[in-house]
Structures are given as C-alpha cells and as structure tokens.
Length: 264
Image 1: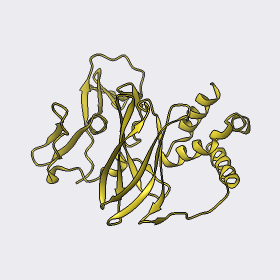
Image 2 (image 1 turned 135 degrees about the vertical axis):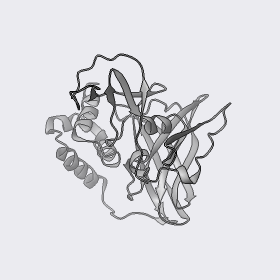
Image 3 (image 1 turned 120 degrees about the vertical axis):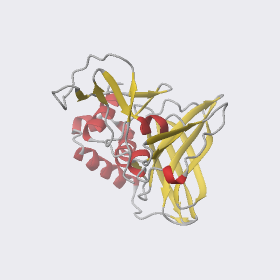
C-alpha cells in the first residue's frame, strides 16, 4: 500500500499569504504553520504539507495522531481512516494488521542514528518531578542487543535530558520508553547514539575529541555556518553537528539553531 497522507479540517476562516495551487474555485494553497503539542513544538516531516483549502486549514492527520498518542490506519477498500485513542489512561488499541500503513518509516521515524537506524516519534510527558520518554526505532537485525543514549536538547542545544538504553530489540518498528530525572518536556532536538550493537562494542571510527570537533566544524561550514558564527558556539559545535546529522536538518534549520544560541 502506498503511504496514506490525509488532511483534517481545523479552525475556520484564514487570512494567509501563500502560494496558490489552483486559481479556479475551490482554492487550495500551501501555508507555513508551526505545530505545538502540549507546549512543545514538533517539526513537520518534509514529505508532509499543510494546506489552506477554501479558508480552512488541512493538516496531516497521521502526523497529528502519532504526536497525540493515537494509532492510525487506512482501509483502502472502504475508504476509511481508522484512529484509535486511549480512554481513561489506557493505551490506544492497536490497528489491525490489514489496515496498517506500510511506509511509515520516513514519516514517523525521520531521523537516523550513528549506526544508520531510523528513529523518531519521540514523546515526553511530565511525571511529577520526572519525565517519561518514549521513542520508536526500526531494527533489521533479529534480537539486536543495543546499548546507547537518547539525548534531548532545548531550542538552544542545551542538554536537558538523557535516556539510557540497554535493550534487546526485535525486528521491525519497536517502542522503547522509560523515566528520566527532571523536566524534559520542552525538548526540541534529539540525538540517538549506540555504543553497543548486537551485544558488541560499536566503534567504526576511533578518533580523538579534537578530530571530532574539527569534523564538526567542517560539517557546519557545509551547512553555510560562517567562521564568525562558529567562534560564538563554544563547546556546542559537536552537539549541533550531531543534531543536524541525525535529525537531517536543512541549512536553514541549522542556521535557526545557531542564531538561537548566539542570540543568548
């Protein structure tokens, strides 16, 4: 089944300057919009689009569902979108296998680990003075014994939470969750690195910290970051480079992060 991307109407009349797709009635146009889930901004994957259709906002329902702890599927025969959500604190019911959307990796798991595994759909909820963190990862190795860390950063690349991982994953897309100390609900960026793969140490390149920093500088320059900007980033250059690599940030997104740091 091809990936199913659908819009849901939200809100009423809009006054938006956008690129028009059709000049005849009905009028459809793109528009740029930010998505905020429980006060946390989430990046819309590049393959999704927000639309203004006759004055109403159409947003990707899969993106909304997966960032709202809901399960979603599609019945191509009956043309039904299926959404399951939790009731009274219970987990949402799973989607029957025949209605699962097959191509979910690029949409729900848009990021890449240091050993080239897809991950994403990261959720952080407050639990008292702590935070419960969950994410999904796609694993192609049976009974893969993995050890690593999911690092959460705020909008200025300050580290605000770390989730240690020591778990054996089955093949396919799995969800991993645990509780960490502190409040990490305002995270904006996340990197996932593994030092253990298939139960063994994973170290494809053993290089010094100095070399890693030089590689980070080269990478950030390729993202159009200037020498002057680099000089103001202090010890955050490696974190920024990792964030840009693992989360596949565009040049403009990297510049936005750099400017947020420099502006204080």
